[in-house]
Structure formats: C-alpha cells, structure tokens
Length: 490
Image (cartoon, rainbow, N blue to C red; front, side, top):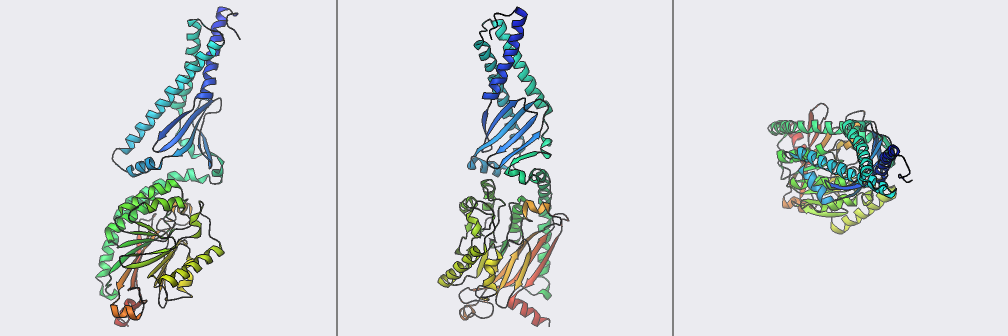
C-alpha cells in the first residue's frame, strides 16, 4: 500500500494506522527482554490482543495465569535458568535490615527498563513500517510514530495502573502444575503461619529451658549423669520455622551433635538445597541419613557445608560416638518416590554386611522404619540405638537391649502439614548418653554393647503446637537409669 495516491486527509489517517500497526507488529515479535534478578534469569515478553493476563512459566513444570489488568495485553514471564551462587546470596540476605526496600527498588528499576525498551521497539516498528510503505515526508512519519507511541503508552500505562497481584489467588494452571492448584493459594497462609510460629519459638524454648532445669532438680525423677547429649530430628520438609527451631534449641540446650533421619527438603529441588546453608551456622556436627524426599542435588549442596556429614550407607565417629547411616533408596532419584520392598530388603542386606565387616555402631539411622526394624526386633541388642523417620509420628520404643527412636516431624510435615485436618505438631528428641566404664565396655554388660563404649540413659521428647503456642515434654529414663529409679522408689 502506497500513501502518495491518497488525499492529504487520507494520508494522515493512513499514517496513523500504519504507525500503530508497525508498533504492534514489532512489539509482538521483538518485545522480549531477559533480566537477571536475584540469581534467576527471567525472560519477559508481551503480546497484544491476548486478554489482560499475566502468565508465569516454569518449564517443564507448567505455567500459572491470572487476569491481572484491564488492557488486552498478555505479559509472560518465563524462568530460563538459575544462578545458584547468586540465589544463595539473596537467601542469606533475607531478614537483613533494609532488604525489603532494596528488593522493591530493584524490581521497580527492572520494570522501568522493560517499559523503556518496549517503547523503543514500538517506535522502531512504527518507523520501519512507514518507511517500507514509502512514507518519506517528516510530517507523516512523525504523525505515524506519535500515534504508535501514544497507543503503546496507553496500553502500558493502563496495565501498570490497574495491575492487581492479588488476582493470582484465583489462578489458572497448565502443565504438570495443574495437578496441584492449591500450592499458590496455600502460599500466603503458609508464610503467615510460619512467621507467626517463628515469633513464638523464642518464648517456647525459654520456657522449655526453665522446665528442663526444674525437672533436673526433682529427685524423684533421678539424676541424669550423661556425657553426651544428642538432638534427634527428622522430616523437616523445608519448613523455615523448623530451621529457626533448630537454631534456638541448639543455643538453649547445647547438644553435642544433631542426627537427622532424612527428608530435610520437600521436593529435592536446587531451590530448596540453596536454602540449607543456614545449617552451617549451627556450630555443631549435623549428621544426615538421606530420605526419599532428598535428592542428589540436595546432598551435593549439603556436602559442601563444613559441619554437615551425609551418611549414605557409611559410618562416622563423632564425639567418640560411632553412627552408621543408611540412605533411602529413593534419595538417588529426582522425585520423592517410595522405595520398593525389594529395594528396602537390599538396603537391609547391605547394612547387615557392613556391620559384620566393620563391627556394630552405637547408633543406626535410616529414614524408612522398615530398614532399621530387623536390627531392633530380629537382631535385638546388636545396635543399642536405632533411629528412623518417615512416619511423622513421635515414638520411643525400648527393647530388652536397645531403643528405637522416631522423632516424628521437626518441620510439622512442611507445607502438607498446613493442609491437614488435624494439626501436626513440631517434634524432636534429646537423647542422653553415658560413657561406660572400661571394664563394663569390654564385657558387653547390661545395655552396653561390646566395643560401643556408651549406654543410652534417657530421652526427652518434645512436642510444640503451632496453633496453640504450647508445648509438652516427657522425660523417659532408659535401661540402668530406669532400673535404679525403680529400685529407689519401689
């Protein structure tokens, strides 16, 4: 179409239409911009006449879309890659003074950059199409360019002024994520409840400390003469409040080390793995037997922390206590599948062979309870303490020569705990050990097993309610300590 054959009024109208068409064409074809924000590489694009929606795409999981603004423009944000080092930095900065203002300033700056680049692309499109159609007169070029820019400014301005992020509370899902639409609606509730509980933790742990001190002074309960105090946890499932709880329990009760029976993350993703760096600030050894919700990416990140030891079918001696850890068969996968019966039996056979070769440890820890069951029931006394997780139920079972501890879920089952009809409490266990005299150790007497050098004398089980802001604690004496108390108070 040539404009020189038209009347002056028609040429002006045609220049306006061509300028708008060129703008729309270029913005739709070349309006894509890539930003690096907080370690995330995000590609942002827009499409006109596509409904006033925003789409967030995370390949290959799927996308989330919501009607967020009035103009007929689709804004699409696609996650392209993740810079883990930068993401770790920003995660470490969370909670720092002024971080909220800095994040807001960065986002505003990126929005301005996107708007300016889009205007530049639109101006180029209007000019290019006008020139392609033979428009050379400055008057018509300027008219077409101005018309295109005015329409684009109107679309962008109305989008920003009417934009409503709350629209994502009622989103549409596509792809794999469509199977779990509750995740987005649950996010607000999860954050609020985690923050509320986190504020209660300091008061709760202080009260716990005073209660423990009072119990120690009650002669009827007997005096615990222990040489080691172990904090036993499991099934944290990436709950932020659980990490705060760990830090405060460590500060208050000063255990010698932490044993984790697995499922420290929920989906085993690199996003979750990057947030585990906070374990490095606990200041004591952290022993993990991987669970089915953990993954190679998670275990690789944990192995880089100086105080964390991942026991994947191996043993370690910490503070003179020998611990053998068994990795859940599913921890080698990228998805939290449950191990098969054959895989569990294979782990049992491999563990039995390792114990025959290396000698019995004092503690055997595995995520799945069926892996440790034979060493408590069928081979009672071979290992003094067996620890498992997975069930989310706190329990301590004492046999004739050994004790089985399941600390429940120190993360209150994570995000799924918020969807439970009944509250799932935060639970953990403190295990007290006493060093055996040399003569008793060599003879393998009482609850001590030859070569282990220790005996378990007591456990403290702790349950903390998120909703009620309350806790319960139970002290249980084990073995000789219990027998001595029974003889004292027949």
